[in-house]
Figure 1: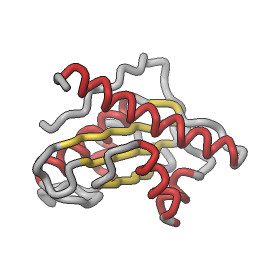
Figure 2: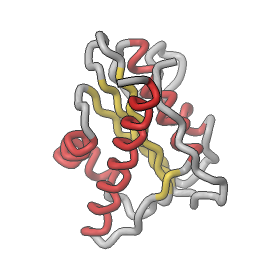
Figure 3: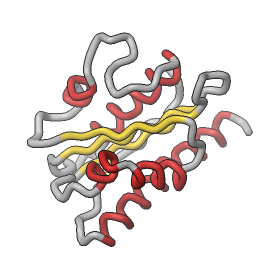
Amino acid sequence: MNSAAQAASVQQQELEVVDAINRIRAEHGLQPVTLDPRLQEAARRHSSDMAVSQCFQHDDCDGAGNWSDRIYSFYPRPERIAENIAAGRAGAAATVEAWMRSAVHRANILRPEWRGTGVSLVSLPGSPYEHYWTQTFGSVPVTSVPVQMAISSPR
C-alpha cells in the first residue's frame, strides 16, 4: 500500500472510532461528539510520541509533561478534559470494544458534557505495539473552525 493509501486508511479508521463512539453515546441518550481540530492535534502528537518513543502511557514519554498539559497546549481550559489510549489493536472496532470493556475508558466515553473529540492512530512497524491510539475529549463546544483531520504519522 502506498503512503497516500495508508494515510487514507488511517483517517478512515479514526473516523470509524468517532462514528462508533457516537453510536454508543446515542444508545445512552447522549449528544454526539464532534471532531475538534485542537483535540485532534493533541491526540496526534501523543500517538506519535508513543510510537516513536516506544512507550505506552498517558504522560509524555520523555517525562517532560503530563497528559493534561499536552491537551491544554492546544485546547482552551474547559471544565473537563479526558484521554483514552490503546495500543496493539489495528482496527477501530477492536479499539472501541476494548475501551468499552474498561470501566475508566467507558466512563470517559459516556460523560455527558463532552462536545469535542480528537482521535489519532499512528502505526509504526517494528515498535513494541505497532499501533498506537489516542482519543481526547473536551467540554468546550467545537468552534466553526473547519475540521481537517491531520494525517497521523510518526514524527
